[in-house]
Length: 272
Ligand SMILES: CC(C)(COP(=O)(O)OP(=O)(O)OC[C@H]1O[C@@H](n2cnc3c(N)ncnc32)[C@H](O)[C@@H]1OP(=O)(O)O)[C@@H](O)C(=O)NCCC(=O)NCCS
Image 1 (cartoon, protein in one colour):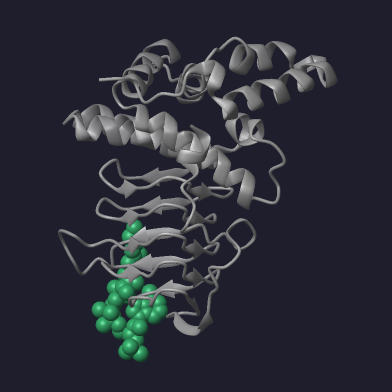
Image 2 (spheres, rainbow, N blue to C red; image 1 turned 90 degrees about the vertical axis):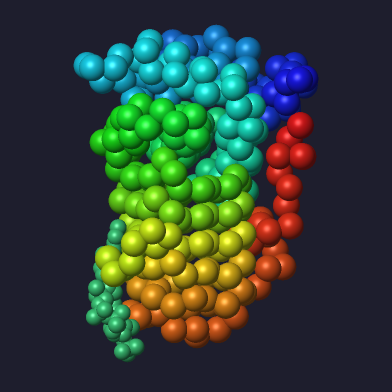
């Protein structure tokens, strides 16, 4: 089967990152060796990603070299992981007003790192390599403060902003182009077993500190105000707030890049 991975020279997103980082080497020579090691020494985004993540997940019992082998194996076996990483980078650049260039989340945003490492854990889970996937989940939780069960289902074009304290349970679903702020829980109520976690549809924005509990659907392009405790299904394009959360208005889907409503975008196609 022909590889879906972008050819390095035609991979516009990766070439853009390399160009921007080359400028940074000139501006900040003190970071030159770091920028070469993490970006400029790599011909593909996948190579740089496995190097960077492995060094972050490094531990005494599983050193970076060993972790990198696992990440490389996942990236090689499933080119969709690299494509999703590109869509995530594009989403962060489009939606995070603190982000001014694609290389910034790649190097410095732990929400991006946690999500890409989760993609590796998820791939391991799909291969029935349960203990290794749980090991990776554990390292992500320790290193980044983000705890996403490897069996959860997450799409692409996802922004985990700031990312500290995000918890996503085993049977949760997060569709494409969702933005999740810090301290958000997609959890169970504690009263259900089996399929017990939220299903978050495309284009949803979940504000900081919100807790969404139970097997409930959060309709596409809805917005959850910060600090909400959501216990009931949320209709699409609605704005909910409070404890427990209630519908307080409607959300618009008209300005994707500005409003974080990204349902219509197929960013991966644009990046190929
Ligand atoms: C409190 C809890 C156990 C539910 O208890 P319960 O007695 O069965 O409550 P019910 O679901 O029947 O709801 C009773 C009322 O309390 C409200 N309520 C329930 N949980 C609430 C919460 N966490 N915050 C505020 N109100 C809550 C409900 O809206 C309902 O209000 P209403 O009667 O006006 O409609 C559950 O909602 C909860 O918060 N569990 C903790 C889950 C958690 O921390 N999960 C994270 C896993 S990672």
